[in-house]
Length: 270
Image (cartoon, rainbow, N blue to C red; front, side, top):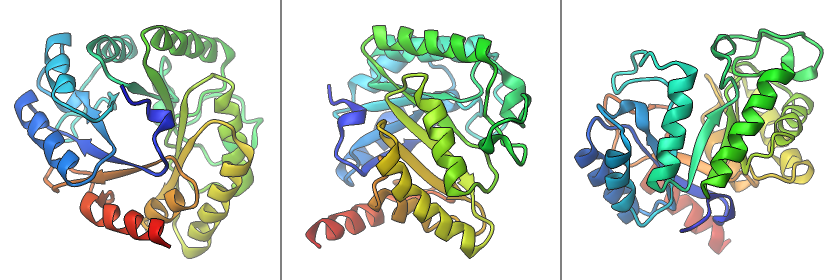
């Protein structure tokens, strides 16, 4: 099995948000033939994702699969899983053969999904960021869970989507803070509401590449963030999350897989 953290950067991830295993398998094949290096499988979009269903999907793919559960259905409605349910889905995916799981920074503390709940004593806790946990008891529980996933021969991408603008220092300090939990890959998504914040994201990606040992995927959402989805991976980011064929379930801000493949191939020539 290919190891997600060892894929040549930037790895092109084909995002799969489908209701059934049959359609998910078809979309995985589309992603594979259009040049994806890996698959980003949204388990919560599936009508069922027991071990048998996940095994059938994962076995169909020649590409390594990163499994995630962002607690959203196909139509983006709230799926209603508890933190224990989400953790169980990660274990199920690892048992089914997923190369890795995407564990969000708020895991085991649902209130932190929508805003910061701890003591505001770090640079990266300013501005009420989402998905950031600083409580040592919760962090300890996350660390134990990461090791449990590792024991199943799967990797952990630890993701945080603060959803607010952050400067270079804040993002680097957040990445180093997350790195202490021993993930295999770190993903951070901030916001860019103007051109200055977009340019700051480019500077930040260069700094992350220099200062953080763990592979990092970093970009900014928001009004001016789109360009960071392609520039930051070129500057050293680990992954690019792409859509092969857009549908009502797609994240519309994500990039087109075939276009990204062409850009990256041409960059390699340069």
